[in-house]
Amino acid sequence: MEVFKMLIKQRVAWAPNFIRRFGFFHGVRLLVSIEKDLSSNKKRVKSYKVPGYEAPFYLRDTVADHAIFKQCVVNEQYDFRKFPQSERLLKEYHSAISNGEQPLIIDCGGNVGLATRWFAKCFPEAQIVSVEPDIENFRLLTMNTESLGDRVVRLHGGVWNRPAKLKIINPESGSAAFRVDELDVSSPDGLRAYTIDEICALQGRRSPFIVKIDIEGAQSVLFMDSPEWVSQTHLITLELDDWLMPWKGTSRSFFRCVSCYPFDYLLGGESIFCFRDFSETVR
Image 1 (spheres, rainbow, N blue to C red):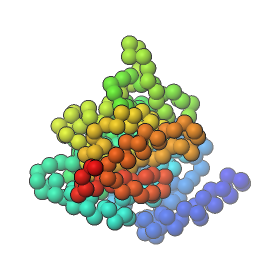
Image 2 (cartoon, rainbow, N blue to C red):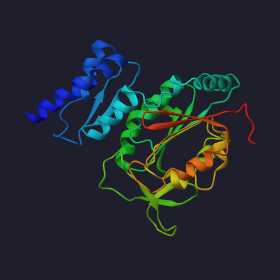
Image 3 (cartoon, rainbow, N blue to C red):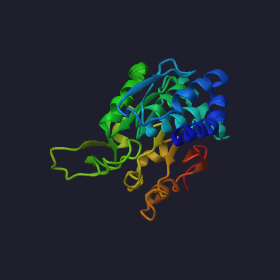
């Protein structure tokens, strides 16, 4: 009975979000499908048809997967278009397309691919690279992005500030909270660490257009050496983790780095959006 009461309460709370995003019929349909008892079979993968997306979404029956669906697809956490700076960003995007270029978006911490799907929908001509360290998440990411063909490149590994081998240090945590750390370089095991510059080089680009970062504190290493790619990126969106790891300073190197360049900073949901002002030179 308590589970049923909680389920009804959650559906009532989320109903306006689903209906506002998908309309009454499809909103209620998805609400009932997503807000359900997830205690039965956590390994089961189900598909969900969502208006506005040609291919279905694949989710496990876990709280984490369904929460990320609500975050990325229902609430559209990464929707930068609500900010006035987005007008210039979109102009730059269309200008690049008109000049025969294919802008590069890098999804650091791709999880099961829902943010990647959102960016692919918003930027239909862009190349997207999605990086994810957990193998089970990566398998689902592959399922969720397979319909996009070669527009999406999937990399099993993590993002770091230098070539290295990584390991997941909290495998007991939920699938949306995995953290990585560096292994001894001589270790025969470990995940591949990719730098942003390396990802750009693999795609034949000098710099990314957008970098989305949700890497559970690893940004403290990623921005440690004030990488040059930051100065060439139009939009960096980062999920801050100081609330999760108090007094660890996970965001300090990030702020030290981006403060060297003319960015506008805006908060949206759990993320900070940093829009690079290319009309202003670095002093």
